[in-house]
Image 1 (tube, rainbow, N blue to C red):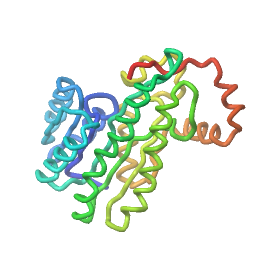
Image 2: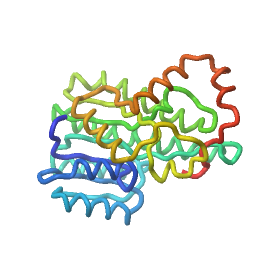
Image 3: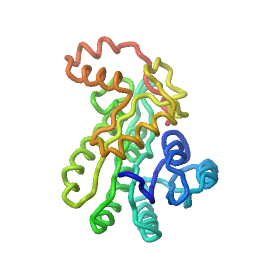
Length: 256
């Protein structure tokens, strides 16, 4: 959507979410920002307000289904909802030697159920408006399961497929759905990764790419392009070959 006036962003207290808030902030724009860290979220909101945006914040957890539905409804009552970016997510892997059931459940709760809790309340609002745009944050890791982060890859694959299906489902109602698949982004989430991260880019550059892709209504916003084609190739190669090549690479940190 070109020139949206009301943008809702989850996971806005840091990383890509904070960078998106900054890049969308402008006079005449309303930002509804959600995050878990109240103090960091307040700093992001202050920076956006300094650029002329009207900002409201909500500190909470995307796993709270009722809380998310109530907050999104409140936001839509304040002003028609133009763009919703379901960005909140966590990252963790097998850096401790194995992945616990608790870690797997936590990853799916935030990365998948948190996205659903964000998207589902917005669907009837936007279809009633006859317009709107929903962006779901997936990952390049969604194209193949990589040893070292099984639950993370699986959760992001589910988000990608969910978003791709919703795009066809909601198009007839005038609602666009876009799936965002970033590679490695320099954020606190990746700072603890104990392995090389090729083509890593800043959150600010990622936000610019995402904003441009949403303005053009690209179905899939995947970047960097070199990393995108590498993971697509990895998905086509025999699994055992890729697994052997990846053997010995440290897993993601168990901390999210």
